Amino acid sequence: MNNTGGRGARRRALITGLTAVAALLATACGEETRGQLQTAGDIAGLPVTHFESGLKPDAPKPELRVRNASDSQEDQLAIAAIADVSDYWAQEMPVHWGEEFQPVAQLLSYDPNEAEIEVCGATTADAAMNAFYCPPEDLVAWDRGLLLPLLRERFGPMAIVTVLGHEFGHAIQFRLGDKAGVDESTSTIVKEQQADCFTGSYFRWIAEDKSKYFTVSTSEGLNQVLASMFFIRDEAGQSASEQGAHGTAFDRTYAFQLGFEQGAKECAGINQENVDARITEQPFHSGDDGSGDITIDERSVGLLQQSLDEAFAGAGVEPPQIVDDGGECDSGNSTPPASYCADTNTVSIDMDELAAIGQPVDRAAEFQGTESAGGLGDFAAFSEIASRYTQGIQKGVGASLDSANAGLRTSCLVGAWAGVIKDPGSGNTLVLSSGDLDEAIAELLQPRSLLAADVNGHPVANGFARVESLRLGYFEGSSACTQNYG
Image 1: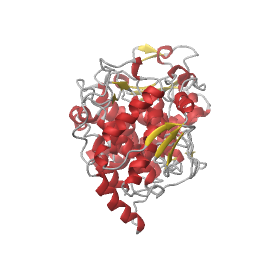
Image 2 (image 1 turned 180 degrees about the vertical axis):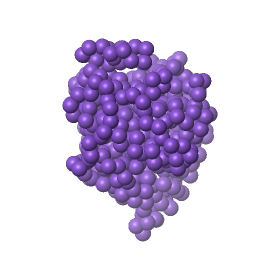
Image 3 (image 1 turned 120 degrees about the horizontal axis):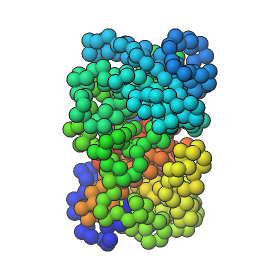
Image 4 (image 1 turned 90 degrees about the horizontal axis):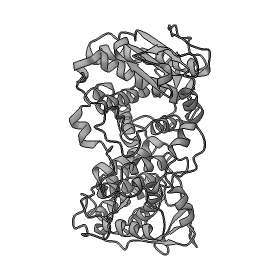
């Protein structure tokens, strides 16, 4: 985040819906007492499921020719993923585009620590920690020595399926050509958003139990998939217009969820115009300090109080005050390191613990597969405080704080606040920096996320719904939060 250097012009007009939040939430509260809530656990029309995701015990052995394949667990998963995603596209391409799917001509497994192999104009040593599709050779290749073991160990077997599904998305683009709006002039970010979207459509097929090879739960399983996409995000400060840009975690999970919810045909409609309208990947702006991170301390939390008060002024309620007194409430339930204390209308915080959460992300440690000495970033810490602040706003207008949808409504309202402060020229006290939304995604994907939790600290079970609610608020404002989450 970035401080604009002073209070600046107070917001006279907020995002659509903040000025009407009191009436909307009051209506929603009446619905809650009748039990007419949306189901918080619904995943794009599929029920929430809990089971171990991965290769089915009775999965057939793929009959594929793979150059340099080993008998490692990583290669077994990768080859099964290739066979599976090929089955998926053999079904989808005739239905949506009237074409028969042509299998990829070449498959290559490699270990960059072993003998170098020439591939796609380079060597496998140059492709460490990578998987890729090479159009001239119609080849899909993957690093079984470094990348795939790291993904499996950190995120489970379906992370490998995610990466191979993505690379096959590029093979589909190559096959569809004009039907996907892709040619030599198409920007990298459009190609990558399409490939992520195709991956989401493929995972919907798995979640519907149509795969012979894999099974994925819509709770923990999809959580791991989204976490793996977060891991392979671009660095903060990169521009979406750069060659090779893949997108932020916020952008990549959007595309995946679009495909999961609306299918492969919708993915082929992704183009430069609609990507430009919603992409969040951008360089640090000129006034940014500290490459997007500021220290969580008394001064910055004071600026956070000011920013939240400005954003939610239209709610017409007494805003809660943020106080550094340990992160717990004298009475009622506590959710340290930040708690909304209803009897005093305060947000109690543990400054030291939040400062640790707010430490910059250690990307080097992430890729080494070690525990990061850093935190989740400043916006993750600010979001946890903001989530408890919005509890006070919701209480002020009479909304239930411990209903089934309270956690989703809360993260959505935090997203709405982020949407208010995204413009550096708006005069807001705080302004989003490049990478801030990814820090919120990182917090949302924590097993005990406070950002998507009700007043008692009970989070929504599935990360898919958590991320979607934050995004909804960011793009559509607070009115969408009450309309969708009661």
